[in-house]
Length: 572
Image 1 (cartoon, rainbow, N blue to C red):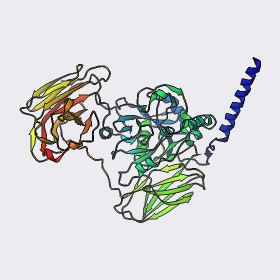
Image 2 (image 1 turned 120 degrees about the horizontal axis):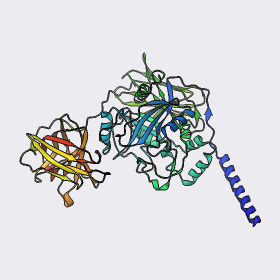
Image 3 (image 1 turned 135 degrees about the horizontal axis):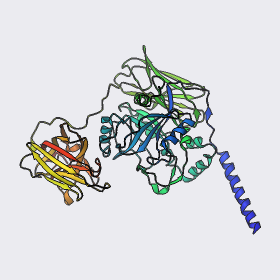
Image 4 (image 1 turned 135 degrees about the vertical axis):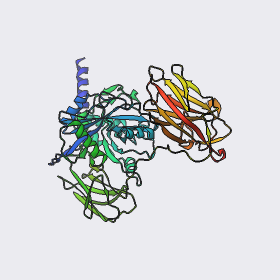
């Protein structure tokens, strides 16, 4: 008996020794400590952090203390939600500026909404363009989260979205495509060099950087996202961790402090912070919006001070700025504290120059051609960038956000739905609705059923002559309070026909809205058909739990509802 126990102990000790030798032999290099001090107006922080308000494990205070231990000056929280939770007022906690943001779920993927100063009046969800419009209306910035995650439920599926920012790196996405054995080895090495082990999983995200660098896009700032939760989730959590609460947690690692020591976002303010939370947060977000920020892979080397400017005549343009059109430009970049770093200057993702410790490239005036110039810094023997700058732009005129497809009525024939039409109310059994007509107004008084979201809806519906072809829906609408309603058309067909729709924003101020059918999206089963000009069975104005809470009530008032006529033979 004793001999057997001794044999087991010897075998166990031998196995542990083999594991220890393997871990020590495969340790990633330790973080290089540089003799550099960032100026007082340059702040380092962690962006995209989840607390125990959603699927993270730490309290806000614990996260702030972890950031302080890691030598950071700010943290941007991004707990999952729908925008209706009142954001916490920015505050300095243990010497760290804590800024509250929210990660939203849209039909195209996740968006981080930065800078919302007040809760949304209704849940922000649905088509990405509508959510982005709402974020902008509420004074916030929209950032695409983990755009190329290997988890299908987390990957961004939208095109040409008018967003403000882009996560060029998402640390949580970097481990999802790794083989189990490599992850096990990383977990073992993380007990010795945790932050370095996290960084060792990183590979240059070519597709994501190409998305960001694509010529012709409106300027967008780039951020390195931690997506820190301080938890290894259970296998039953699935791909999409968008819920308000965390699933099972196998291990509370990597910790917040370890993630803060792996990746940092550095922001250049116009002056040192004052200690006033709201004022300093506004300046921080303003600098991020302006592109005065760069990303650092801290697990490679730290601190990192990057200078990147464009000199055009008498003008010196800082990172995030735009050079004057037509003038010759010299782009200059340098890094303090290390001589053997390789700096690469890229124009629209294509390398145009490089140097050790510094780089300078002369460029002729770009004229009307749009170009984005960016710098990446690489340490010797490393294939993943140590520093990634935000661009300096050339040839980009002021580009206001594109308007939503609503506007003046087109000239041409139209079918009014205000007279001689039997409007009716459709609803689920738990909800209530009635029609209130007064003068030329058509009102829908509604109350959604209470409880949890379970398909509650109320709809104002008008039947339509199916023999004609229609191009667009137009109306003047207002609502008793800010809300989103879904304007839908039901096409003839089996099982009630295919429905297409578009969400529109209404508030107490009357708005003229025109929605071309080709701008609508299928509701229900996906289809490649597009109703550019189509026969319509009915028109619906729908309030449901996509953009309203169960139990919500109010009134939607419509006037001059009409359909634009067209030749049904010219469209699908």
